[in-house]
Length: 554
Image (cartoon, one colour):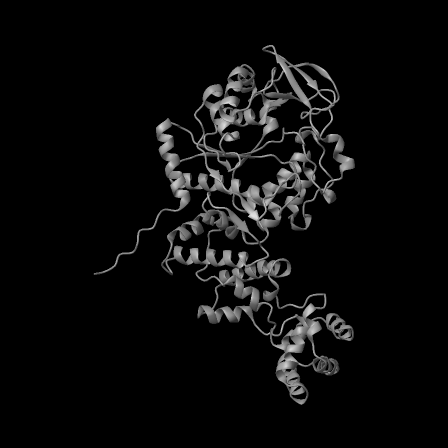
C-alpha cells in the first residue's frame, strides 16, 4: 500500500491570523489596527525587536488574506526618565531625571552610546537632526527595524496628547476614579490610596513629570503637587497648583495610558511581552478598563516570549544587552527577519552569536529556501517562514545558496578561490546574482569570524601570541628559526613553491608533521590549518616578525 505524506500543520503566523479573523467576525470589527509601543529611554536592545517583527508579520499576513489593516508603532516619549543609561554622563543628565523624554536634550553623538560606525550617511543625518533625547534613541531603533523590512507608521505619544486626541479619554479616566479603584482591587488585589487620580502633570515650574501627584479633579482642572521625595530617582521642586489636564500638560499613568491609547487610536490588535500578560498584570488591568471605563472592544492579544542574548534579558535604560542596531548587522535583512518568522511567538529565542547560532540560522534559512523553491521535501512551515522573510523590493532570489559555514571556513584558506569552490558544489557556473550573494555572505562571515566565532572555527592569525604556542617543543622552535631564515630568502616565491620548500626543510630536520604543526601553533594556536605556504604568504610581514621574535619568550 502506498504511504501518504503526513499532514503538516499551518505556520504559526497563519494560525494567529485565523484567530484574528474569527475574532473580527465575532466582535464585528470593521477596521483592523495592529499596534505596538516602546519607551525610548536609551539605546534600544535586541529584545524589543521581537514585538516589532511580530506585529509587522501579523499585518503582512493579514494583507496577504486580502485585508487592509492599519499598522502603527508608538513611541511613548511622554514617559519620564526614571533611569540613567550607564553610558551617559550623570553630571549632565541628573538634572533631567523625572522630565518627559521628549523634553530632555539629546546627548552629544559621540557620547550617546550608539555605534556610529554602523550608521549610513542618511541614518547619521537622522541622529544629528534628532530634536530631543527620545528621538535620537527612537531613530536608532527605527533604523534597525526598518532594515528588517518593518513598515509600521510611527506615532509619537506626546503629539497625541498635545493635539487633543487624548483629551476625551483623559476626561473619561478622571471621571471614572471609583471604577478604577474597583478594577485595581478586582484584578491586582491592590487598594489605591485616597485622593488617587490616574494622571500626572508636567510641573510648570521644574518641567518634571515623574515627581508630580494629582490630588483633586474638579471637572476642568486638576490640583497637583510636585513632591521633593515622591520617587528616589528624581527630586521635585515643591510647587503646587492647578492646571487643565488637556492639550499635553501631562499624561495618564501607564496602566491607564495603555488602553487610552487603544481607544484614541482605534487599536484592536496588540500583543505584549509575557510579563505584561501575567495574571493580575498590566494587560488584565487594561482589558478591564477597556470594558468598564473606555467602552471599547478588548484588543486581540498575542502574549509573546522574550528574545534573550546569551540567556539574559536586556534593558534599554541600563544599557544591558546587545543593541538592536548591532544585532541587525550580524546577518542580511532577510535572514534576520527569518529568525523571527520561523520562531513561534510562544517560544523563547535564546540567541548567542558567540556560538554556532549564526551559521545554524543561515542553514535553516537555506533549507526554507530549498523547500520554497521545490528543491527538496520537508517541513513547509520553514518554507512559509522563508517567504515571509523576504524584504519588499528585494525578492529576487538565486537558485543556489552558498553555505555560510563553508564561506566562513574557506575564506580563511588563502589557497582557495571561493567562487571556484562553490562552482564545484553547485556543479555549474555561478550566476551574477549568486556571485553577489556569495560576496554578501563573505561580508557577514567576516563579522562573525572577527567578533563571535568559536576559537576552533578561526583560522586567521590574531594580533596576540596564541596560548597554545607555549606547547612548542625545543625541536619545533629550532625548526621555526630555520623557517624564518628561509622566508627571508623567499619573498618573491609563489605560495605553491614555498609550500614545497617548507616540506623539504621539514624532511631535513624534524619531519613534516611536527614541522607543519609548529607553524600552525605559532600563527593560529592550532595543530592544523590552511596550507602553510599560502597561510604564510597571506600573513603580514610585521605579524610574522612579531611571532618569530616572540619565540624567545616561550
